[in-house]
Image 1 (cartoon, rainbow, N blue to C red):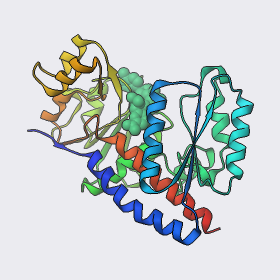
Image 2: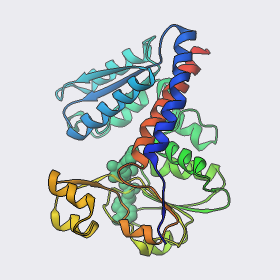
Image 3: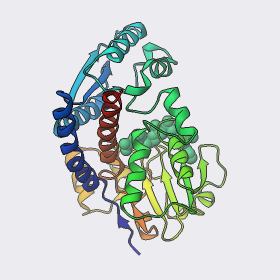
Image 4: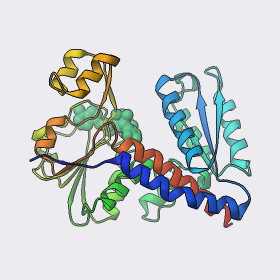
Length: 309
Ligand code: NAD
């Protein structure tokens, strides 16, 4: 058996086509486009790429996307002052503070910042109020990655109600909100993590398996019930040829590209899983593009809600 590939890139394109006229309609009615402020503190190569992609996606759908940069030397007070300014801005409907923040800001910087963002502009869905609403089953702005996964499952006709779902990873941005969204859709949900014994056996019970660990290739065939849907959230960069050759055989196009670039992006799920799974999201081109599409959805939702008040 070879799993059906769930093409997140294609769905993200369709979502962009759906959002674009709605953004134009918003701009016509309110005399301005939805505004998204992205805050980037310091220098981080991966964050630069993520932010560039988010700004481009925002421009493509017709938003006003603004990049607000702070230097590596900025203090937490500087960052909180910027967030306060954006909270009060009439033209910004969404505020996203790119993670990770520089270590120099202190261990509790991220939570201090999320505490400070106005909930109605919290397009990442990370503020305590929005997390609380999600827990209570009355979500408003929901974290983009799990929201994108739900959109994918829905549009691909993959049933959730009554199914067993297993999530590997319990982070605030993926694992926990993913569990809540699946639970709200009547799945029977198990959350696994680094201390879960017999991980493969637990995962093998699942009709829907979501891997969000950042451990390249953790999920092998032994984790997967035949026919299950496997969603790979992981984004891991491989730079070692010997490791790359454990992923793809000589002559495979992905390995050829590794030889050109010296690195490749892989997920938490080994490609052999396609022999057992019923459906599988690829990396790249699966969950990643949907995360950005959901950021656009959340920004439009936030803009409409603000315009209505
Ligand atoms: P995190 O580091 O905050 O959490 C990782 C989780 O995995 C933890 O809960 C930990 O207990 C669990 N874990 C780690 N090793 C494990 C093991 N051996 N067995 C079982 N569980 C284990 O990570 P995160 O922020 O949730 O991100 C997870 C991955 O998803 C990363 O690769 C990240 O880059 C990726 N990610 C992708 C997107 C996207 O849009 N595609 C968005 C967010 C995160």
